[in-house]
Length: 223
Image (cartoon, rainbow, N blue to C red; front, side, top):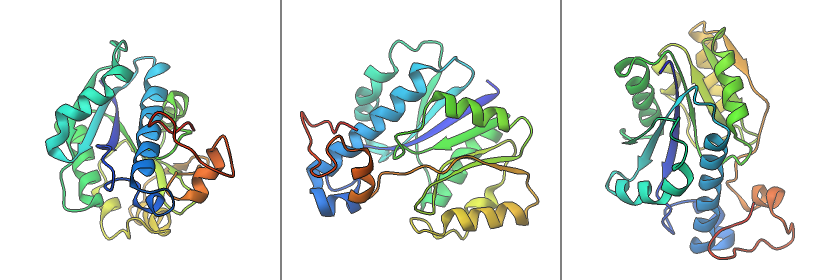
């Protein structure tokens, strides 16, 4: 298919996900929050997906493929019009992992337009993805900035691996440095609305049903 969506996801293991959030909630509750966020994004992009793009789930760690497929199966099952593939993330750091994923989809699989998202932004849905693909009909790059200085979405209609080199990942400079790379490479770009990733307890309060005391029930955090 001409359009492809990459989803970066981690296996939900306490102590391995949402470490900043765990400082406030503990490993188990932080993991439950991560699991709920990831499931929310997966449901959002599949429920209203009109079948205009394939979904490629790039996961980590590599030895958890079976567990991740079993975990996500209930949210993907029934969306037979959407082709879904699972692949391990490859690279020494986040930049290499993103670059390798784009290379696989744009060059090796021959897709024309490709978008990557994570699972930390609860406002990502099928409509937002469709709008981003529409933008890529006219622009080389589409990017969705986060309030913390990163980005929740990046799409491209041509390979541009330089965008992922010499970036200070997990800092408030990621979006700024990426835009500098886009401008340096003379790529046309459209910027989406700014959204919030859930990385800290302050971020979580914004979406918690109880702004004073976040709770986890039945191991699923309700956002």
